[in-house]
Image 1 (cartoon, one colour):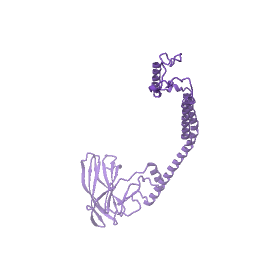
Image 2 (tube, one colour; image 1 turned 120 degrees about the vertical axis):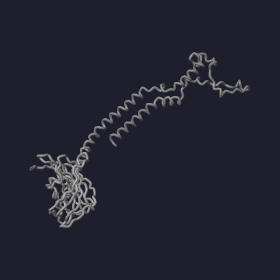
Image 3 (tube, helix red, strand yellow; image 1 turned 180 degrees about the vertical axis):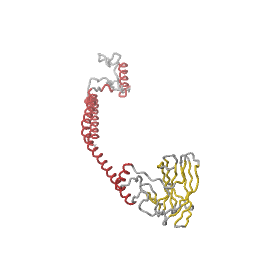
Length: 352
């Protein structure tokens, strides 16, 4: 019964066999449109210098649970694969009625110009997965090269090079044109480099435009700041002026000194006065005892000294000056502080 098979899944080999003239390229799972069976197809590549006429491999198919569905050898015969040619994708090594999850492949023997080559001695080298290009850059690269398969970053390794289509070309192949997509190695790199450079310049222009807009906005903010700063400074000065206008020097007198003074007044002047109306009565007069002379021989000549409060009604120049200093020092200090604050604000917001 004839039926058509459509591609259901495809996976590239994540390794290459160093030194081998034959490389495993990819595995494809095809689904029949009538029976729904799954066909396993393998693709290989001749990277040697001689035509390939036959290949023997060993494969193992597993399901999602890891159970082996099929393990067998497969012989590709009557081949005419020239150096660089792909082969095997048209031959199904296994057809399953259950889903296939993984396929393991081991190369056994190759036939080059009629002589056999043992491939089991070549060791596998794991390859890194090619990096995928951003969608916008990949689209631009495809448009400029006319190749819709270019989706990855071309990369050089010590074992070979990756094409932008994702195909790996080992050093044994010694080619500059991809055998899968037909892209030129040098041309793809040059085109991608140009695209990336254009993207970099566009990003720089965008940054310059952003900085230009920011620079244009900054002066407007600077012009509006001085008015607000001046208003804030004036408000600070007015506030300080109001505070000094109601200043009362007596309000700053220590309460303890005032209480002590009143206690002395009450003790020496019970009626609230230091002296009685009769000036001859000196019973309540205070004397500076350290200036008195208690020598018995000079008692008559020693004059009594005036008390500490005896000359309260007299005012000296020093007292006047002290009173002025006490009265004007706080408001002057407050005004100077306000001016300093205003100058600092203007310097910070306008000059700096």
